[in-house]
Every structure is written in C-alpha cells, then in structure tokens.
Length: 225
Image (cartoon, rainbow, N blue to C red):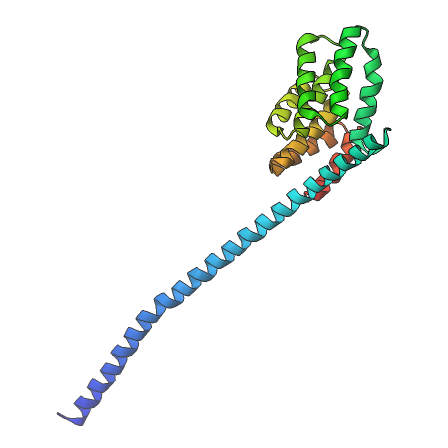
C-alpha cells in the first residue's frame, strides 16, 4: 500500500470521526437550549404568581384593617369616622327611627343587634326573615345590604355577592348601592378573583365618585397597579 493511500485513509477516518462527534453534539446543545427556555418560562410564571399573591395579600390586609377598626369602635361603645364601614353603621342607626310599625321596628333592631354583636350568621338569618315579612318596608334596601354584609362577615362570599348584586341591580341609584359594591369587591378579593374585584372597584369610582366607598375603592385600585 502506498504512502499516499495510507495518508488518504487516515484523513478520511479523521473526517468521519469529526462528523460523528458533531452530529452527536448538536442534540445536546439543543437539549440545553430547551432546558434554558423551560427554566425561563417557569421563572416568569413564578414571578407572575408571586405578584398576584402580593396584590391579593395587600387587599386582604386592607380589608382586615377596616374590620379591626370597626371592632375597636364597637368596643369603645361609639361610632367613629373610620371610612365607609363606620358611615354605614351611622346611616343604619339614623334610618332605624323611620320605621313606623313597632313590630317591624323590633324585627329590624333585633337583627341589627345581632350584627353589631358580631353574630353574623344569626344576623343574616334575621335580616332574611325581615325581608320575607316586610318586603315593602321603607328600609328594605338597608336590610338587604346588611344581610349581604352579614354573609360576607360569615365568609359566605358567593352568597354575599349574589344578595348584594341583586340589591344594586334593583336600585342602582339607592344610598346603599356603592356600599354594596364595596362589599362585593371585598368578597371577590377573598375569593382571589382580583380581575372581578378591580372591575367592581372601577365601577364604584366611576358611577359613585362622591360616595364614601369611592375613596376606599380608589385606594384599593392603587394596590392593584
């Protein structure tokens, strides 16, 4: 065998070996790229979830602060100016004197006493009974609002939304409409439905800009930014 033939065969073998190595290396690089892309996508998803959880936590904290303020006011035995929740209690006490029928008045006060004492499940039942007995009461919207608020305080959020949405639909220009929407938004936050909560808060700020609830809604919307 000639030297030229041996040299040619040696070069061919080297070329073939290099080609094999290259062909086997490419899938490894491709696999590494896929892993990197997958890791990036997973990281982005984790960051998105963390941001959503932070928004949820901030809104829940805002709601809890409002509830704590209300409880402090009740323990002190007086109504204080602590935002929309306290203004609701003031309106309720003022409106209760407008009921002429003594039995109707007694039923209303009994349910309100349960609510003020934090017996929310019993209060919700009491307000429901009042609605059945006095559907044409001059304070029907007030009672329906507190029925929904009692359900919210009992953590029956879906039921609270249903009751309060019915109130808003039946009387969108009523004094309790904005407050009802505020409790709906809080229920949606508790259910981690932040998209719906944002829409509800935007509706309050847009449709009821001068209400006490609108100020609270605007501050909650900032937390969602």
